[in-house]
Every structure is written in C-alpha cells, then in structure tokens.
Amino acid sequence: MIISVDGSAAAGKGTLARRLADHFGFALLDTGLLYRAVGLRTLRGGTDPSNREAAIRSATELTEEDLRDPQLRGDEAANAASKVGAIPEVRAALLDFQRRFAASPPAGAAGAVLDGRDIGTVVCPDAEAKLFVTASLEVRAARRLKELRERGREAIHSRVLRDMQERDRRDSGRDVAPLEPAEDAFVLDTSELDPDAVFAEALKFIKSRQERL
Ligand code: DC
Image (cartoon, rainbow, N blue to C red; front, side, top):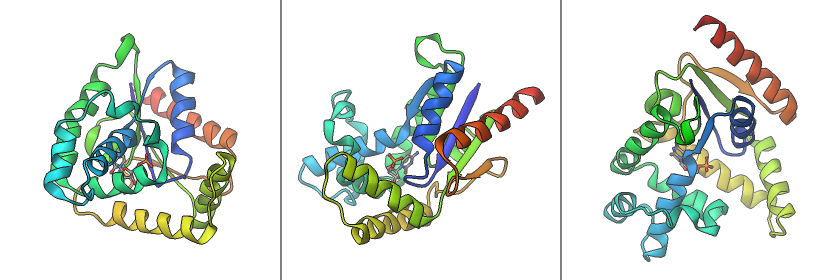
C-alpha cells in the first residue's frame, strides 16, 4: 500500500507522515530531503540553485553523504530546494528513486508513506490513499517561527512569513508538478487541529480507502 502526503510548507505533513508510517509499519520517504540535498549541493558548489545546469548536475551526482548533511533541515536548504524543484530535469532525475522506493519499500515493509508536493499527482498517481495537508499562511508561519526559536535560532516573524509566501508562490506557480491536490486526495486543513486530531482524521480516511480495496 502507498500513502501519499502532499502539502505546503509547515502544514504538518512531516509529522503526519511519520506517525502514519509508524502506525502501519510502513517505510517513510521525506522527498523534500532529496530536493534539499540537491539545493545544498548546488550552493556548496558556489552556484545559485536557480542555475539550471548546476542544479541538474547536482541532482544526477547526488550522494548518500549529501543526504546526511546536517544543514538539510535549515531554511537555506528549504529555499534552495524550492528553486531546484522548479527545474524539470531535476524533478525527472529524482523520479526513479522515489518510484522505486514506493514500489519496493526498504526492509521488506508492506507499504510506503511518501511525503512531498507532487506524490499523489506525479510520483505515485496510483497511491491507494492520498492526503493533502494545508493550513493558513499565518498559522504555518507561526508554527515555523516557534520551531526555529525552539531550536535556539533567531527568527523574525515578518521574515519567516515572507520566505514562506515566496516558497508557496514558487512551489504552486511552477510549470512542472506544481503543488496542488490530486483529484482523489483528502484535503486536510490543519489550521485549527492539533497533531492528534490531524492523525485521527487521516486514519479515518485511510481506513475508508482500505475497506474499498
Ligand atoms: O517538504 P520540504 O519543506 O522539505 O520541501 C522543501 C522544498 O522542496 C519545497 O519548498 C519544494 C521542494 N519539493 C518539491 O518540489 N517536491 C517534493 N516532492 C518535495 C519538495
């Protein structure tokens, strides 16, 4: 079984995807990390992540070590990821790995949860259960601000809000695989829900899909 969890930044999809993977004993792939690693590798090569040739090279030469980079979770990597993610050849280079993971999850797991932006629409259009997680911009910016401060980082509300708005615009406005719910996705607005309620809603939907299989 494949569960796709797509949605915007800081909407809560990472937390939900992890909980679902734990609950079902499925393998988990955070596909954002792949784009982040490509973005960081391009930056580390001294090139802007919007540079097509450099980003494509980073995607095709990506190593296991790039995927372990401690800076992967930072905002610099997030913004770079959003830039390289707009380049069709970068997306194409990462597609195979994601599809192989979904088709043959590691360690013999009975299923996979993939979290990203285009899993239900492009990577796994046949996923048995598709979730699309959103929340208002204000709520997402507040969550990100809290998270940054908890990590001991200095963060300014207006800057976090602006960065998120820019990333939303890039992720939703790009020509290739823009951020949008699949037609058969269950859209979950988490603005007023805590993580337990989000998980319960998602589980209810997945169970209804399982009954139909
Ligand atoms: O999920 P995340 O915040 O780690 O993703 C970082 C960026 O990577 C996101 O702004 C857009 C890009 N991305 C993408 O284009 N497609 C995916 N499947 C996952 C992430």
